Image (cartoon, rainbow, N blue to C red):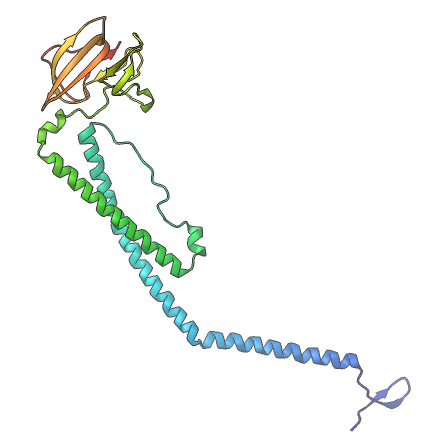
Length: 267
């Protein structure tokens, strides 16, 4: 049945004809309402109901979170263990070398930065954390064995450990001060190849020379020839050290000295 509308200009009824544009607008209106209803339906379903895959993923996330917490606890225990090993290591260094151990900084430990943790997927994060933990455990075990071996091999020495020469005989020594070592060397004075049976250390005149271990001064010599002024210390157990090319000699024959004690100055 045709529809009519009243034309107020012509004062008569006319057939109501719908143009193409009217139908397009009406179609878009229904399409928009349909899409809006679909979105609302999807949001409601997502909030109220879960798919099997979503439930499985949530279970996996909970399991991984629990496993990661366990790894964190193990890492805390391992960190305490390594800290204790580090203290033992420094104590051994002080005992053997009678000096403060050098400070080392570790790098490349395998730890993740905050940015990496945010971008890594859970599987990789847990796997690599477990791998890092395993490597640290192995390293800690090896360090513990090494320390136990050192204690075992030096335990029989007892107090004699202080009589073993272990430190450099110069105050504030730097590696760059190392000179000629043992072996056949060219004599700087006679320009001939001779056997060099000591270790040359380069230092300024007046630098303090210290005993490398506890012992008794067995010889002091003042001379302007060969090795110049020198001091010999007998540490017992077959150990003797000779300090040559000295300036002032501050000890005398028969004097008991301790490791680190100043015995002379560089000449």
